[in-house]
Image (cartoon, rainbow, N blue to C red; front, side):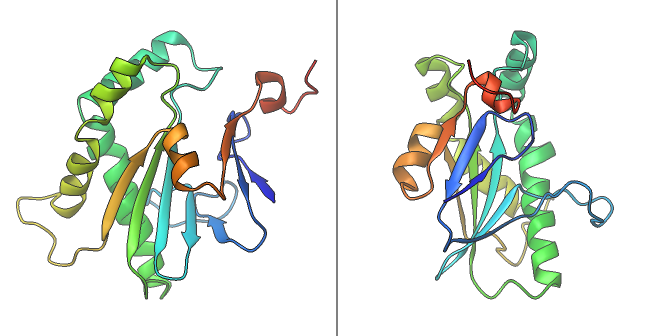
Length: 183
């Protein structure tokens, strides 16, 4: 199993089996096309390609004000229009131009919402997938003629672990997330 964190200070850690074909698309320190925003991961399966974006407002180092601001942006859909949809479009475009689009693309958004209570989580997640897919398919006054994203799903950490049981994600303790030895 190979461990992966989207950022050095992230406290969500994935465990991927060695045979899984995946790559970090939003790499730091390498030349990437200007004005393009990429998803965190691309996972290639036999029948499709998963574009995986990780958003974790529950990160232990995020101040409460920042968590609440993020919750508001999730609630008012600005995360959809300003972050999630552009990342899906840019990531697809990049992979298309690299001739890596032979399989259907599915967009997976992992939201670390465990800092919020159950009612808040339910309010956020209700209809989120439908709003996201609608925004991806129709960013302008005319829908895209090509459905570049076949489907999408928005998951909490718990649902991720049920859906992708062979690729578990865990929240690591703050000291370990910082790369320090846990006490």
